[in-house]
Image (cartoon, rainbow, N blue to C red):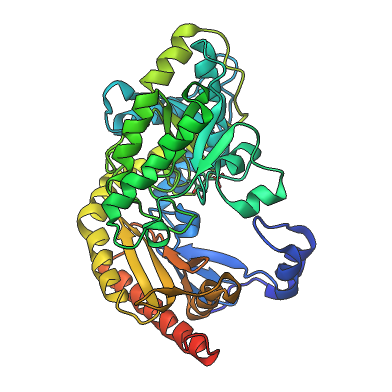
Length: 465
Ligand SMILES: Cc1ncc(COP(=O)(O)O)c(C=O)c1O
């Protein structure tokens, strides 16, 4: 079946008028964008009628799957009731209050870092800008304005605004914007496969990788450092899962020097890792938690920061205006959709489902996938997964960056009707949490088929010899 959209016309209009994010404009206008027209469950269809299994939940966000009427109804109802009102001038709205209270009730109690407050934005990037503003305001109010530096990791992703991209550790992004902005520092990522030493265990590596934070704090001067920010599992960097020892040791170091700890859970929250929030799964207690994406399952834009009591108390009790906010902070429609989305997740017990059912089921499949001759490592965390494409498994020999093996594999996935993302030589997925076992089987069969096709291709090119 083809959908009633003239593909060529829309591709021409697209290339004439629409500059896509993270895109080589010239290359795309030569090839023409794929026009996506509709969706249902875990599938999307393009204008030529081709069905694609969405192994990335859009962009890590459509956790409840496509076509959920409850979310559309909530948006419709709120649009007809109060589509917009600002929250700048001592006004509020019902869904924004209800969602803030709901989020506070879902965030696991982290001792004195209880999360009673929410600061809203419309995206993950904006939320991390808000984090920078809030962290600096916090230290200013405490009379330590010299505490400015926020430490992050190489290959972290924290968004694409000036502050978000600076906090992130993507060298390509830094190169294009004279980034990072001042007072952001980076340490190496906890990527055992790449940075582990011969003979070192993952747990030993986790402690060593966390130790890089302490070294950086000491190099900068502890009284200059404001905070550390990290994703529980690095998503856009390639689903880099840290060893179990990493986060508890980070917590110890952060506590030792009194830093604030920011957990960027834009990808990891709302069931993705089998819990509402990911920090307690990894054994740490952040002061600020960034969220976005799956809070509405991507149906409308919404983001924010969960503000723990340590920061919240200072910001509130000290008084004085916090000179920061957005037109759409606490947008009633976005918050109404967020409430409907969380209610649906609760009713369908999606975090538990990931933890007890589909997460372990996917993990079993990934054990089998790790046997593939092209796969050097295959691992899952909750309902996301990464695998590394290698030339040889023992000893591990990796493809060069210029060979672009990930993009070759991604091309086959596209062709075979599967959305799987390539990050260098890592192939990653983060499927909708509502997938059934048979849909997981279907996805895994496609992954294996695309690995086989990639294997044949790289062999043809003589890269395996
Ligand atoms: C961990 C993390 N933080 C922040 C962002 C930025 O979110 P947005 O694209 O909504 O600005 C992303 C996006 O993928 C992310 O993965």
